[in-house]
Image (tube, rainbow, N blue to C red; front, side):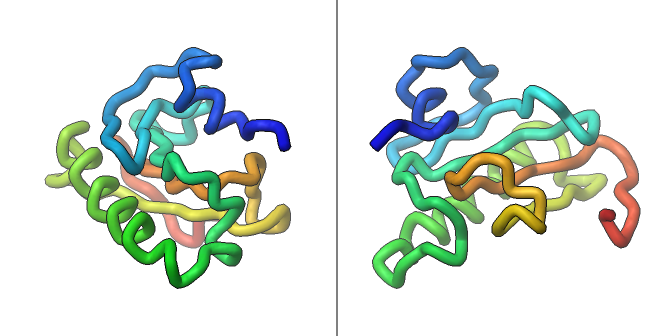
Length: 114
């Protein structure tokens, strides 16, 4: 089975601007930012999408959210606010079949997102 783009980034096979890493997750800047700050945070365990996460993944899923908040604060987004987005499936805009969370901020974000 071939590695996803995000697995290759985590393995340092593809360069990325990494802003945070621990044993379970990796956060790096998006190469096509949709806001002044646009960071992706991914579990190192390859879970294709949220709908395919299992009960055994609850620890990594909770960790992903908690670390997203920490990364957002580290990037200076806490005071003004930020948006967290998880796309699930092609119709939602999922481009890489590896669960990832977008951290968007640095400007006023509109609703609905589009």
